[in-house]
Image (cartoon, rainbow, N blue to C red; front, side, top):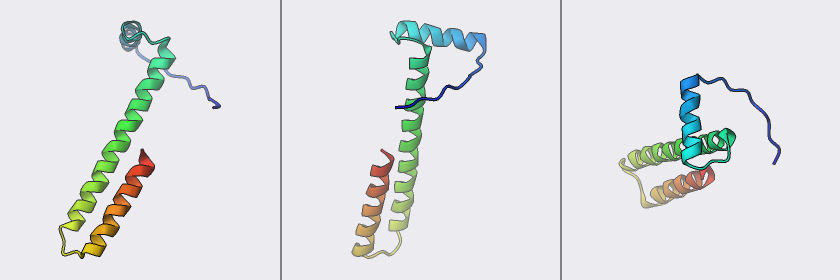
Length: 85
């Protein structure tokens, strides 16, 4: 996988905190820790968005809806959830 380099400025105290975690958690280096932290944030955000969509669909299902429409909404919700994960 091709990678791109980015530049990042951090306050010294924040960088010291990162270095401590890198050491305690046995990360190979700062880059590995930062990549992992970003992946976790992306996954968390995707899960929150999927939950919001499911809640919206659930709210829509509280209306007078036929069984056929509910099945269509369930399929749509799970399809979208599957795409995001």
